[in-house]
Image (tube, rainbow, N blue to C red; front, side, top):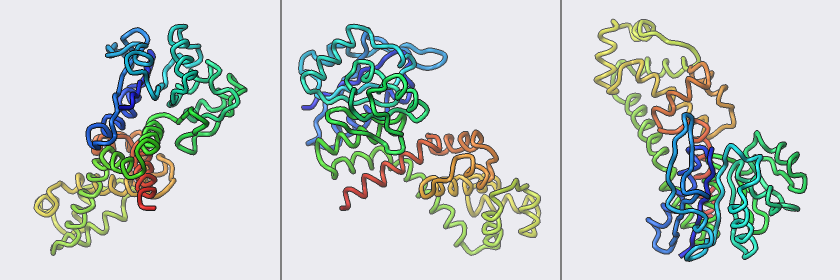
Amino acid sequence: MAVIAFLFADGVPGHHLGIAPMVFTTAARTVRTAAYDVRVASATGTVVTGDPPLGLSTPWRLDALDGLGPADTVFLAGHERYREPPPPAAAAALRDCADRGCRMAAVGTGTFTLAALGLLDGRRATTSWPHTRELARLHPRVTAVPSGDPATVDGPFHTAAGIFGGVDLAVDLVERDHGVLIAASVARRIVMPLHDQTVADAAELERAHTEPTTLGPTLEWLETQFHRPVTLTEIADHARISVSTLNRRFRAQTGHSPLQYLLRARLHEAQLLLENTAVPIEGIARRTGFGSGANLRHHFTRLTGTGPRAYRAASRVLAATLAKSAD
């Protein structure tokens, strides 16, 4: 059984605590041959995250790296004090792992920890895009690779940008361990719930269009109005009925009020743009009538449980992994 040790430091972003570990635990639980012992560790046994700060206990300390059953892979998350060298005990443990040929992975500013130890000298590495120049400045012996690609591999060192870059990296490690078909299966289980919601919404919108009703032309007209605010009165005027009749017919046909339907239709269009284009978030917000990226993020997160950037990255992970499995 392969041991994957996640070493977290104070100031770790909350999403780093769960996203990459979820890939390996999903593999271990769903694919019989993908056996992983996932260890969550910190140097002191506790880690602080969030604002306001939240203290969390970790089941392991540094013994997760070289205790009973030494780690095969050490995974470093990003953290706030990335400019500082790691504590001496953690530095010694990480160097020992590297010396014995352990696979070393880092996400986001976790890459700075490996660089501070000199482990990335003469190698290529990736960090979160706002920190790429800083990595090159603080560690000139490291070739800082822009984070356009999800992950960079140089020997036993695997580095990636933050958030879903960590998923890319973790899925890639599962693929290296167990092959592309198992990696694709794991990616499906992690990412497909988001896509299931998209498919369900698409089916619902399609039914609303195809059911025989006088609302059909109005539904088609609404989808040409995403770029601007639309009132109930305007929708009723287009359908040539009263507002009360409009509400009654919309609920009978779609299960939603007119404005709820319009919101879901706009979100569905935003999902399609995120999956199939490189249009920036602000541009998608304008195209779909949300006005600002902040407003789009609010509604999108409420519907899907994740933000638009993460959704776009998740879609990319799934598409790339499934494309590999089809080759």
